[in-house]
Length: 163
Image (cartoon, rainbow, N blue to C red; front, side):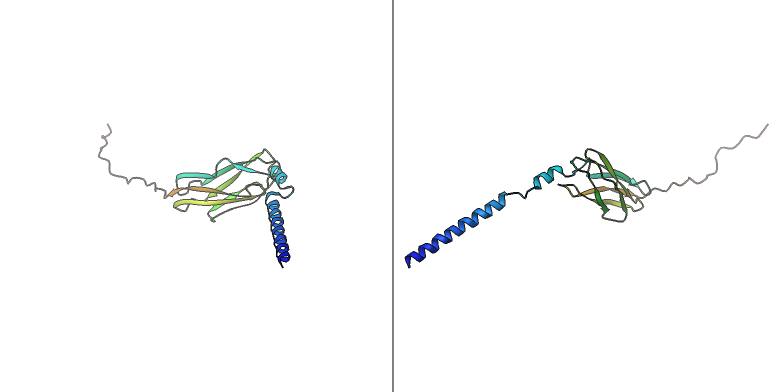
């Protein structure tokens, strides 16, 4: 009976050790090709992630650009660019951006809406580390002051009679 107990303990101990080594090996082993793929992927780097309009007036042009560069080793493809609201319309290059080249995303905000601006533009691409980037536009739109002409008032200067 003692021999059976020792054998069971021995096999249990061996099972635990082998299982533990297997788990450790899985945790430290990278999937083949993942490191190489990260090094060879496209990467997107924006000059600025936020554009501040400051204070603008109703009807003013609400256009801005977000410049970016492909800092990776593969062509960068922007698959989708969309905004958080229908009042903000982005336009982006549909052709691949080659490594080392730059381009921009143009954004047009509808300034007929008076009040604060805080909108998000989401960029989806094939970039390795940053497949999804959020850009923001902020600022304030004030109501445009009406330009009124002063009312005509009678002149206090009297004309001299002609000689």
